Amino acid sequence: MGIIQIKNLSFTYPGAPTAVFDRLSVNLDDHWKLGMIGRNGRGKTTFLNLLRGQLPDHGAIRANVSFQYFPNPPQQAAVTVMQVMTATGAAEWQASVELARIGLPATIGDRVFATLSGGEQTKVLLARGFVNQTDFPLIDEPTNHLDILGRQRVGDYLRHKRGFICVSHDQDFLDRFVDHVMSLNRSSVDLVAGTVQDWQAEKRLRDQAAVTQNERLQRNIRQLKQRASTQRNWAEQREGETNDATSRAKAAKLMRRAKSFEARTRQRVEERQGLVADVDTVTRLSTGLTRQKNDGQLLLSLRQYVPQRAGRALFVPIDLDFHQGDRLAILGPNGVGKTSLVTSLLHPTTLTTTGYQVNHLPHDVAVVSQDFATVVRQMRPADWGDDQTRTNVWNIMHQLGVSRTRLRAPAAQWSMGEAKKAALAVTLCQPHALLVWDEPTNYLDIDAREQLIDVLKAARPTVIIIDHDRHFVDQVCTQQLVLRPTENKN
Image 1 (spheres, rainbow, N blue to C red):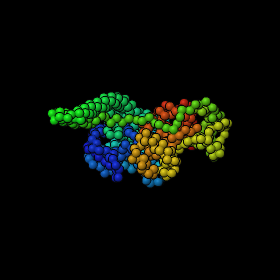
Image 2: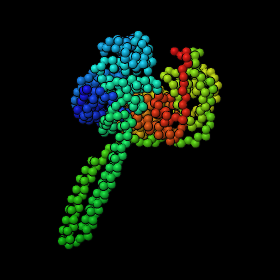
Image 3: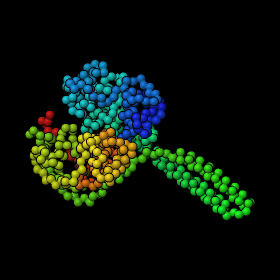
Image 4: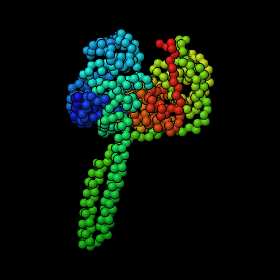
């Protein structure tokens, strides 16, 4: 058992107004299964890059392990899976064992890595991080290309490993395997033994205690200021009422005492203000959504419905009744056709379909698609709409945890999480007859996911959601449609 020792670590990106880390000191056991969490932009990926020496830093990092970063895909186009697995010196038999442990078939070693699905590539690159016993994997956002079953399998795989850091925003995924949690907060770092759920419970208690103390300190500060003001006003009043020399001398003495008391009070106020805790709270979203009066109008009815491509059904035919006010989750494995189903319903002429449908879906539809980052990063200031709309979008982004400094940066420089928050904010800044969100939780931090859950449950909009976050789906959706692949699907 060894220790990864971090002492007085500081780092600031060039041109940034504030530091990402300022004299951070923490010790990590290299046998821990450590889950790292925190809002978008708090420095999780930066921390991993500092550990592996990819960024210049001030401070000291000492470790007796070899850090291996995930995903870090191969640069060569034609490299095979086995070549990827053995690139760090592992034997082929070791690579085969690790691939089997993560649930991949024995034949996958001969396949070209670039031809694999996103989920298969994720599993290969994760297995590569554990093929050498001396490696310490730094796993950055592994769930973005995994469906629900894939997340469960990878979570079970990681539960039987030890010695790694995993950055993820999927609480259910992390809680399958972590034994320690490190949370990067706005002005502090939490390190606790247990799961994310354990950390949340501890944080709630700590925050409640801090809020109670803050309220008491603020009351005390107001009382001190009031006493000082009263004393000074009284002394000034006495000073103005005196005429003879003796009275003026007494009044001057009272004024000196009042000023001395005021100075002491100012010092006591500053001391108490220094004790006020910086509680990292989550703001309730203030959006343009209004709670709809849902009359249960039938918007969509499907019977034995299925889109086709090249004459082949994408999935087993489905039956569905979708009404105004429903919050529908479309679930299923990667590649089964979830996005294609939504496309066929919103744009009926794009795909050939079979079966029966009654389609009364509204035309006022706000969509967050999977290519959200490309769309957002290409937007110019005028593309956001008028000044009020742009202000509303930015306010929602700020409530979701994007700093004012980052909001002023060009959209092309926003992170994936910031771009996702922008795309969601556009759909939330005013009412729409239908929301369609394709994988809304990808790249979103846990707090932002909880904020979305709260606003959707409160406003009850009509929404169709494709997502793999089980907790999010279970909390938000009133109806779930599971797509199943056809037997002859490749």
